[in-house]
Image 1: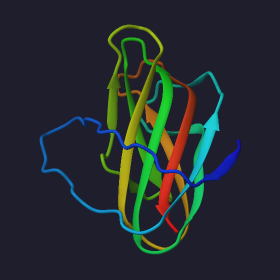
Image 2: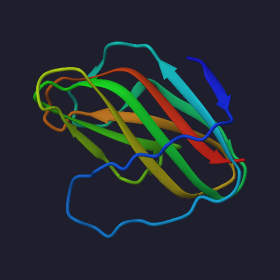
Image 3: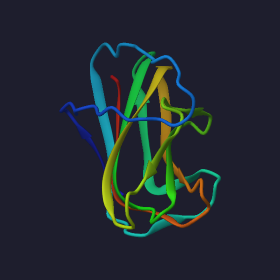
Length: 155
């Protein structure tokens, strides 16, 4: 797994969440941002568990410069057949990003590329570990293949 610092900004995509309608979370991410990422060429990370598990090679370590937000962008080739695929960003084994969970539904049993964005507000300064996790709400096999996890944080 190769982790590299980047100096460029990324585009942020809007994602839909499941569950009851809630008010939008609105905020600002001010100050200089750093970025770290991991890119994986694994082709068969699979689960059929309803319990979230770490996606292999989907972990990024970073050091937050001061209190502020963290933005996580996850892009992957996924295949869930007729099953739904749950994704979430998990910080320091304690905090789930916003949205809490994104559930992907495939229209047909094929491999598709999907991108989701998660935000953490008020992350304190210091060392942190971000893990991307997946689950199968329907208990059928779901697969995450080649993927990139990018973390933007305060410098």
